[in-house]
Image 1 (spheres, one colour):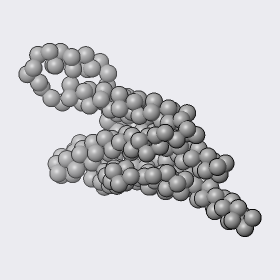
Image 2 (tube, helix red, strand yellow):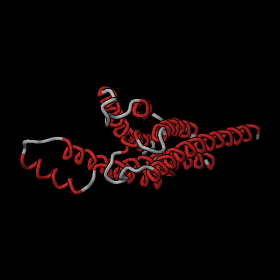
Image 3 (cartoon, helix red, strand yellow):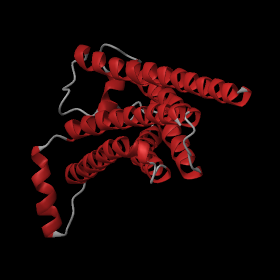
Image 4 (spheres, one colour):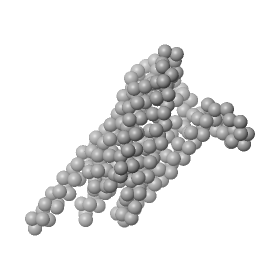
Length: 236
């Protein structure tokens, strides 16, 4: 009887930890999304055509982009905390990807893109590659969690939902990358150039925002996975 009571208490503590981490992640990610939305509303830039990086130089709302990216980074760390608290196996690869994505968000916030002459081109390169690493790492984190929860019947429906989000995020990322190539590179290979020219009708800024939104949804899906895992453990 005492062992049952200890197990129940341990499960309750674990559930409480998951709830705390998930609440912190939701607050951080929600604030990041809210700040970014307000910035788009008050700025004079085009929310469809202009890249998000340009909002670091907005006439109103200065500092809001940096605050949003830093809040995003905090939310990502909290998502990892929720996954661990739920008892899910966060592999070394997933941890490395979380560190890379978090570092990339912080670097993108601290080093603005080169849109004006007074910005060091090195800062622009750091911003560009930091953003690229972040965009590539986030779907990878979800893939690692899908792999570590394979065969867990209680999480089958949640894994299916997360897998769809991963495919959507990867598809958006591929389209964004191709659109970026079409917009910035002059390629000599005629068939590839013709194919990429079809993406000229879709603004790069729009695709970038789609990728950003899908990444938010991907992290929300990981939080759902943590909650479901904690509940299945409590019922076991």
